[in-house]
Amino acid sequence: MNKNKLTTSWGAPVGDNQNSMTAGSRGPTLIQDVHLLEKLAHFNRERVPERVVHAKGAGAHGYFEVTQDLTKYTKADFLSEVGKRTPMFIRFSTVAGENGSSDTVRDPRGFAVKFYTEEGNYDLVGNNTPVFFIRDAIKFPDFIHTQKRHPQTHLKNPNAVWDFWSLSPESLHQVTILMSDRGIPATLRHMHGFGSHTFKWVNAEGQGVWVKYHFKTEQGVQNLAPDVAAQLAGENPDYHTEDLFNAIDQGDFPAWKLCVQIMPLEDANTYRFDPFDVTKVWSQKDYPLIEVGRMVLDRNPDNYFAEVEQATFSPGTLVPGIEVSPDKMLQGRLFAYADAHRYRVGANHNSLPINRPKAEVNNYQRDGQMRSDNNGGSSVYYEPNSFSGPTETPHNKPASYEVSGAADSVAYDHDDHYTQAGDLYRLLSVEERERLVQTIVGAMKPVEKDEIKLRQIGHFYKADPEYGKGVAAGLGLSIPE
Ligand code: NDP
Image (cartoon, rainbow, N blue to C red; front, side):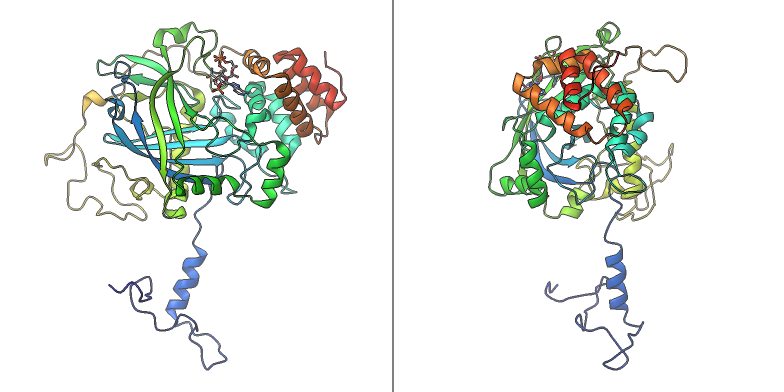
């Protein structure tokens, strides 16, 4: 085929792409110019709905290589032998801003990895922070509303942000991370990534352990000072996107060590924090990091829309040997992420090239909008059947586990929202603490109601009295009773 010959979307040669067909040289334009109609109509449909959260993103391809044998903990095929390489794709993002918003804002960064394993895709859909603001998915839409725009002014609204946080003290740990130096990474390469939730690993004997994931940047952690970040946000809103693309383009491939923390199942009943509560970490003194492998990003996407915008990640995209935990935030995300993609990209989003597993897909799902493969052809389209269609493999059933308690809408038993936020504060250097307090004071100043500020100061105080006093002094308020 002659690649230089311009065609319509139905493949016919185009005679004129400069002038629309008109009645005489002055017009009006004729509706029979279907090339014009198709061109304008397709243009109107160029956007898919942007993600409600994590709209602004940058992606890259790479590989994951196993560096340590952990088969005693998991039968996951892609972790089965040292040296095994699995292709992967990552999408980094900010959370609150729209698709065209600035990269260098203070916000958690999405850190979503898709491993194309031989036993199907595995998505690890985390952030650059080990914890999250809330721990029950029922609060997620409300929380995100506070991060988005005011319904009347269409402006960001610090009143809503701090009202919600002060009334949801489980957010304190993540708020402290966000307001610390690490709240604005220098680049996407200079930050850690975390699976954040607790997952379960299951080995070939069916024995399980709880697991948390840490991607440790080999570039070192580096952050942007707020004034530099603000300047960059104006001068080059795509600073992080550009940095990642250029680094890979120049052969400076960023890499992360993947480490895990492993907790015996029975420890979950006695650990001093609820290990499924995503607002908490597991202390590394209790559960030290164990290296599993290394992730290297070595190829830029060829096409942003096809690969980065249409990439769909879901924490429920799991492979044998990796299972979920009861984490209430994770449980909600198991629904919300896949559902967002069915709405945004379509019911057949998994068959797009960027999402399509390298492993063979055999099932009885058929039809739906934009089904673009052969739709199962003439093969049997229901199960069970007598025609040798694909059948289940019972050894791949998730491990069973005991549950107890009454079905009820209840909070986690543990509600210590302060110790770990305080531990983080105390881990910071004096200068880091000063900058943390300064950032919080700057962020809280526009809040109109003292009631909200005082409630939040109370939380900082409970984490560490010095922390609370610092913020109170900066805001010209005294510590509440
Ligand atoms: P450890 O001393 O064993 O670990 C401290 C952790 O904090 C390390 O992961 C370290 O990662 C990280 N860290 C160091 N400096 C900073 C910083 N300025 N901002 C954010 N994180 C930093 O202590 P624990 O495991 O008992 O945790 C103590 C506190 O550390 C926690 O309350 C939590 O806030 C924070 N933390 C804990 C993590 C965990 O998984 N346990 C993970 C990240 C933070 P590194 O040196 O690589 O930067």
